[in-house]
Length: 348
Image 1 (cartoon, rainbow, N blue to C red):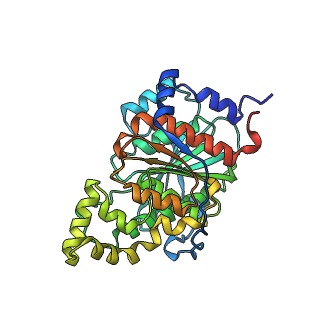
Image 2: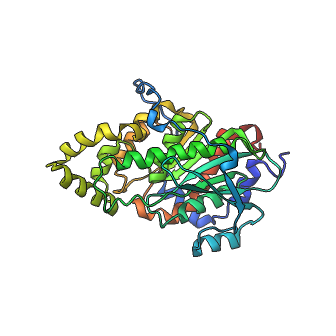
Image 3: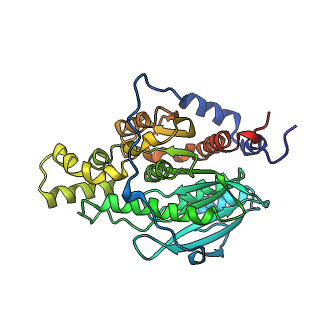
């Protein structure tokens, strides 16, 4: 008989979807198991200097208790009200690679640990840290210690710097690696069972982190994509479209082909599809929107192929329609982490 803390029991406790909604989800979604292609995957890329990091002493990390809900949003307060609240929460401040402070938040489940741990990245919109904290709350409820990261405003709407995406994503991944250095020194973190997760831009950062840091053993990428140069042109996300137009004007580029040709060498270092061959396909779960125009289907397919066709959930949605599926998706992500990070504790 499994103990009460096994992932199998946590799955049972987390299954609050009713029969009718669950049936609707099953009919609307499809899951593709790991299905390796017939050809060879791209060679594993050389380590990327722009994604390498420098450490800082543990004493430069300031860890302070904070309210159980860090972001003031009704959906987070409601979720917290209806679900377990026996975890501890902390705000972590430490030096970032670009100067200034990087802010992260720790959610620590009950018990001494060491706990399997997940690093969660935020989406593009700096005003919507709600998504990252919501994912963290869903995962800590399943027994994971979770660290979710904040990120400063990238100011895409006003920038015309061709190097901005590379600077922003590489510094975010490097800061996450610096946070990992700190986490693995903690007695409540199991350094051998670490995963990463993210939605949209956060999924791309999670993929990059797993590709360059072998301490990360599992990944859950929701609505992410590869082919960064093409994505920056094709995405219908308003800030990204503004950025594209600003760069086109500054560099006097006449077409999509010109833009992609100019941006591809600049963004190669932070292209998830380039880094993906370094990741073991069975360690990854991907979720894709069939009608996504922010991360167009072609870009999602490129990343999935580059990852070696890992297990994938296909959702009947565009990019902004993920909310009705959000908690269900987080449960599937937790199931995946259970399978990869804690298989020895699975319930029969």
